[in-house]
Amino acid sequence: MKKETRKAYIALAMVSFFWGTTYLASKISAHYMPGLFVAGVRQAVAGLLMVGYFKGTGYAWPDKKSLLKITVQAVLLLCISQGLLTWSLEFIDSGLAAIIAGLMPLFVALFSILLLRFARFTAHMILGLLLGFGGIVTIFYEHFAQLLNSKYAFGIGLALIATTSWSFGTVFASRYRPKTDILFSVGLQMLISGIIVLSVCGFSGKYVNLMETNSSALWGLLYLIIVGSLLTYSAYVFAVSKLPPTQVSIYAYINPIVAIFLGWLILKEHMSLNVVTGTLITLGGVYLVNKEFKKQQRVTR
Image 1 (cartoon, one colour):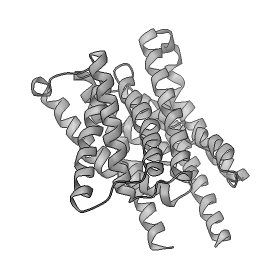
Image 2 (cartoon, one colour):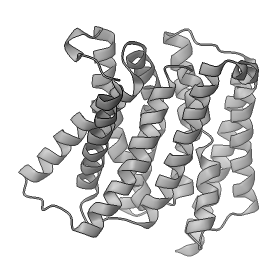
Image 3 (cartoon, rainbow, N blue to C red):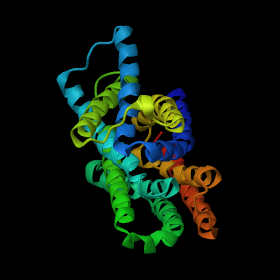
Image 4 (cartoon, rainbow, N blue to C red):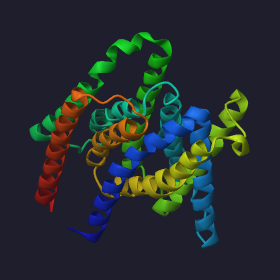
């Protein structure tokens, strides 16, 4: 295994676990502050830190074509996806939001076929994706009746739009890569998105005075900036640049497991036999997808 590929797998492992923990932090922060505002501050601060670092070390601004690609990624992956998903946490449990985000591999598979003509899905890979989806549906089954609640349904809708946007952005980022340092690109994405989202918050009145906010919300926001954005989002973009998009998408199977467990442990969110059963089915799907991708990599070398 090449050194860069090994690093990409480590990055993917970080994304799989730590992004699962950010649902808890986002839920806590969104309890005291508007979800969009939480997402905007998270992105803007992390973006300023990263862009400031790279400009301070002499990096040049990307060319116009690269900047356009970075902006599109920022809108798809951060403005729409992360912004709406964080907003959805005002209405639904953190574990449920993670479960909906877990539908992402199916959208990635579809977009990969449409945009990446060389993408190939074998029977084992499809079975793995279906198992992963089936596990998530098993977990989600108990929540169907609550869709009659308009606020709850609105939260579900936000999460679904966020997941679709993230899936398309994942495939776009894999195919259209800007000609600049990966992490510098990440910083620019976050800064651009942060400015856009905070502008929307300013016009819509969805903002608060951070100096007057609950300390738990501030700690949650700090965790999102450092762990969720600076570390894990950077790891995600690196993984996407080195691994096939459908393989990277398997993190969405693991995130719900982490989020559901932490939501149950800390926020006392619902845990049941369906959740445990769905978790086991999901892990089976992850195993099949990983196994098939490794097999394809060995054949193409």
